[in-house]
Image (cartoon, rainbow, N blue to C red; front, side, top):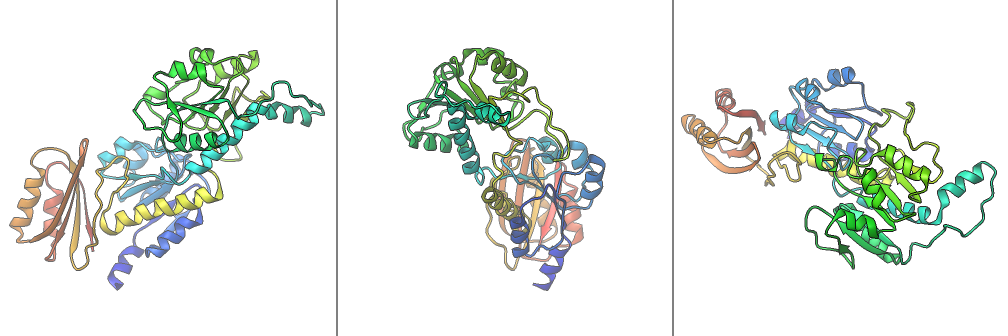
Length: 409
């Protein structure tokens, strides 16, 4: 146990952007106390200097882990995104260096869904523009343009974890729910799938976007799509900043083609709370602008802190990669009394044969072997009964196609 504690004390965790203290508690519970924390994202040069000797790094949405940054971190073992999205990480570069990337796809779904539902109600009631007018001393007490959500149609684009939960909440308030997704999804409740994006846009009173960042979703909603919305419809985006053409949206709001909008994510977001927020939507009373806070509730951040920290410690302790976004998924048992070796390699023929040949030549008996592949990456975990030598590790690392070799005690 002393040797294991000593080993863990040498493992450095770098946590950026004010990650919730629950992550520190989870790391401490697992025996990791070498943790460096920063309250915000670091400029690239500072980040590269700080990450150079880090074994694990935890970030949120502002930190950009480019290929250059990843290459500058030779000791980096895994990356934890304490949020849903992973587009701030160069996943290809991480895979190329044998680094799994973990995220929290479930912990803040309720928080995002609740914010969107609140915005649905506020937009349908015309609250944003009335509130703005009241701040200017204007009293706009009228029912004109103010509607209940009951009986209205909510169109959800991207029927994943958040979209599904939003649909359930909306139905509970009496809304009709329709959705469009590029994959076939079984509906929850009475939600109805739409065959095309256009048909959803034409039918919905409120459209809410919940799609991932991908080449196929870039500017998914532009001037042509906005023109298909019914007169007075509302548009909500709490997914990714590059999904909506904000200039086209601003023009539609000014002209009255649509009734209102709520935007939580933007193509370019300030690095810190001290930087100015710039957007063509500023000054439009009928548009709710929020600073990427869809998942920013204390409950969500606490859950995310625990979820991602536990994924990182499981990978550190026994090599488990369940739910890694860029890496073969392997769920592993404990390895008491045995050495565990992790070998990450290019998914090419002959690697497994070469690995087993190394063990044979070194007279090492294998008691367990777990292999999984994903795309160009292969990941094999080997439990051995005998002590290992540096020569064995050197031989494993020298195998053609090897990306990374680790030893777990």
